[in-house]
Image (cartoon, rainbow, N blue to C red; front, top):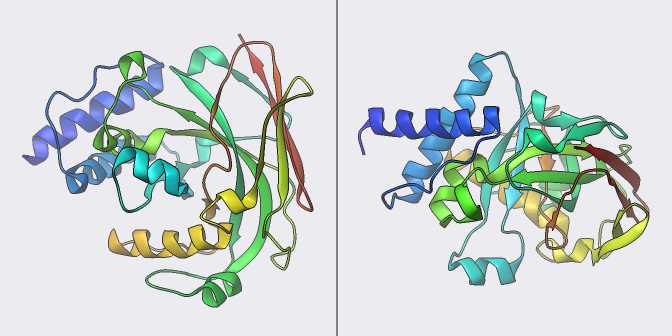
Length: 255
């Protein structure tokens, strides 16, 4: 594809996210490399408006999801400053197209991390860990899309809420978690659902950003991936997450 074609798609997807307007699925099949190029240009529009890149989110961190989508690797997207929702704050349903939420674990990077690293090196780079809720939102009409469509659309990243930061020494292996809507359990899960251990997602994050010529820098946030299936949001509810040993976070949804 020509660069102008990539820019046109990126501009369309950026506009769809900015105006909360559904856009058609991409007309032609594109390569994964082109999808990531569109994603970079897409986020470039946000940065040009004054947002800051503050980290990345990982996707397809469930082996079952990889098999379902016919892929052998994770996908990722970029996080910007305007995506961060304060713990306990409200979001407007009308600011999204197909909003869903999933429980996650977040890492705060303390040392530069990039390339093929092992778990000990990744662990040493962590400054803190926290419970997190990711608000995902596909901008495509009728919630229909291909793998490359998703990647081009910043891997559906839209917003996220962080709970209190905890010591990086917190054992993240198989911690139970409950995501609730208005105090009623919506999803039960475990941190073990994230690649068997969330730290493996951080290891993968260091690799994929390096392949894109980037790095995880001090202060970056890494969302490790969904620990359960995503649940659709609706107006008027309070969403909360409690993760064993990590704590709680939540947000309200307005109409």
